[in-house]
Image (cartoon, rainbow, N blue to C red; front, side, top):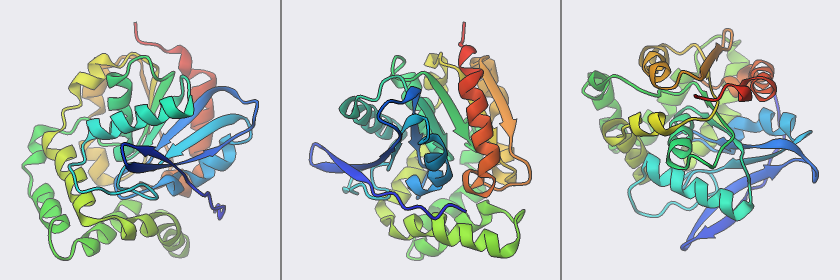
Length: 283
């Protein structure tokens, strides 16, 4: 596993500090990369990718508002709001035509970013994202239990248990525990309850990905893990109907945190998309 630590820098947007990590050579290969963390996560989930791609490409990993090193003001946290933050960060950093890579909920935010700002990105990759869940899922007992738990007094226990379960048990027990404790648990323990609850409630109950998908014309890829909940709910068939440029792949015998667990597989797929997949633009 990668033990390298990255120190975030902060940009001030209207009094709110937004964090990011940047790596890569002074003269870098195009296109640059933009990495977006998921719910309750931070840039650490992309540690192997930051190390791998820093050899050739300018690579920026943001911390979503309310996550990691970013400030957590008392407000609503929406997919559209995150996309607006990231577009602003790209402008401030002069990050031109990046390939946008989002893990988990970061993939939904990446889709919104590419649809909301159609000239911003060169390509889009979603990693184990629930993209277009069925409306039935919103009314399910599982979703109600999750929202009640995250909104309740024992919310940290709910977040920790949810993250542990998503990791799945493909790896040996000691390595699974190490990945969880090193990369997943620390940002999860730091997140404020009002952030965690607002993000998940708005993303599940209020966000409609359809307009962004219809507007997104850049080359697009999806890398799946093997998590039962995500397998059931991701909605790739619906996405493919709207975005015929979508290509899909799956990591072998890995849980939700496949960017760490099987980093070599993920990095190879991303390299292939950068070398070949960027030609598959929507007509």
